[in-house]
Image 1 (cartoon, one colour):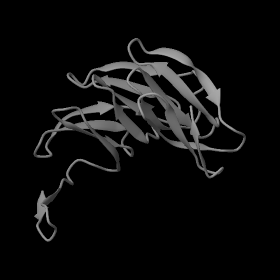
Image 2 (spheres, rainbow, N blue to C red):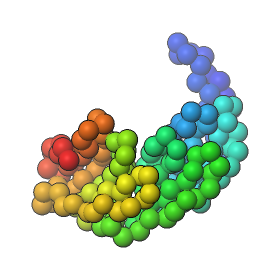
Image 3 (tube, rainbow, N blue to C red):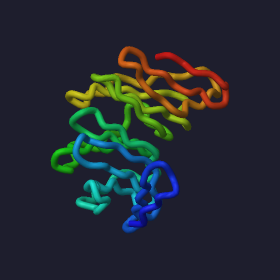
Image 4 (cartoon, rainbow, N blue to C red):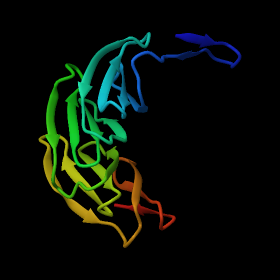
Length: 165
């Protein structure tokens, strides 16, 4: 770790053990960093030491924490990991996943954008039930996503718009 103090805060860079960091989430105790190049999710302590490494899908882009589990979206699957133990609960496929990119959680449902499929896919978080895949406007390329707790908001990259779902 290399502390830097030229800023009004201290920045500590953690470099060991990563080949292509892509995203990070906090579970209330630890940081989980998605390493896209080696298809893993790494659990780090407060000092940045890697405590655990979990294998996830290839071509991963996002990690979302739902309060219990971490959902990692990849090109054609979603890996659901219990944050407290690091155990893989499920690897979800189907349900319209096609170029999965960005995930979002609204408190009960998980949504992932499908760039290649030009759609979004939904799951019920409590029991991992697929709720369907829903098309976006033609050639819009759903990209980023978030939730305001009621609706999902999806960035339609090539349409230069946001969609509320």
